[in-house]
Amino acid sequence: MPRLGDAQLPCVCIVFTGGTISMLPDAVSGAAVPVLRGETILERTPGVAGIADVEAIDWGLVPASHLRFEQVLGLAEILERALVRDHVVGAVVVQGTDTIEETAFAFDLLLDHRKPVVIVGAMRNAGDPGWDGPRNLLDAVRVAADPHSAGYGTLVVIAGSILPADDAVKVDSRALDAFAAPNVGPVGAVRDGRVSFSAPRRAARHLGAIPTSAPDDVALLTVTMGMDGWLVRAALARRPSALVIAATGTGNTHPDVLAAAVEAMDIGVPVVLASRCLRGGVSPAYGFPGGGRQWLDAGAMLAGTMSGPKARICMALASGAGVSGEDLRELLAGPVRK
Image 1 (cartoon, helix red, strand yellow):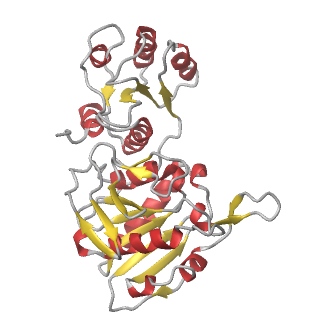
Image 2 (image 1 turned 90 degrees about the horizontal axis):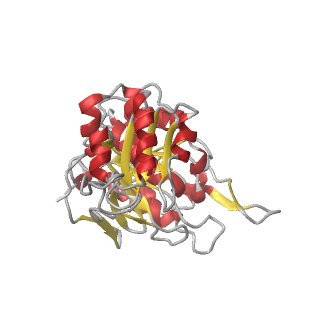
Image 3 (image 1 turned 90 degrees about the vertical axis):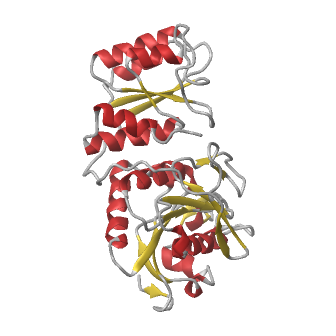
């Protein structure tokens, strides 16, 4: 796809992958399906050429719920090749919102650049009168081109909010402002075409390199009331690469869930304890059977404030990069919340 913009402006690479922003209602079912390529989305987004000199890459029309680690690693390689070029000041990835909280965190782990990577999508399809794609894309390009974005790593830009990738989660399946950063809040905003940053980015996690592969079989199980260890044992029958337990509260479960997790660790399956709560994270605060203290003492790794899906991303990519032991524990724990 050719360049769009003025060579005197900062250069931003935009990678189009599909998602709701690319969709139109199907003529038969009326349900949204991916149709619009990157060039068409840009044509329907007046004003981009006045913000940046755009280099567009039309990667595909893939629903975000279909993405696999192989594709995410390939996209990371594309972004890496773009960001190492001196004239490129930042990059934008256009994708479906279903898995933005996961892909954004993956790019945050994989890409160690001062140049920003901005992930963006839309909550309304292009056939909806309230299509939010153009506004979100314009905001994303503004953030990627803004010199103050340097050092912020990967960011999610939706409905005017600028969110750090390690804390951004989708909290509403329909609303235009569907994303939030429950633990740290937004780091900035785009209002009336102006980018402003209101908070620094906390120290980001980095793997140091993009692995050639990452396992898709890291199991994520959410603990609920009345649940014992049967689901953990069922997962162990597949011998997953790792096991993430999204526990209640600060990391508490029925004792049999912990017993099953110990069985996993005994056969060499790493176990990570996360919280199913969106805010606050895990801690060894409780010492009763199945409490967080017992999980830690049994050898489980704590995921800090990472959600279960983010902890799964972290474990898969760390496995691919060969990160283990104390380095893996520190990677999972991440920055201490203040």
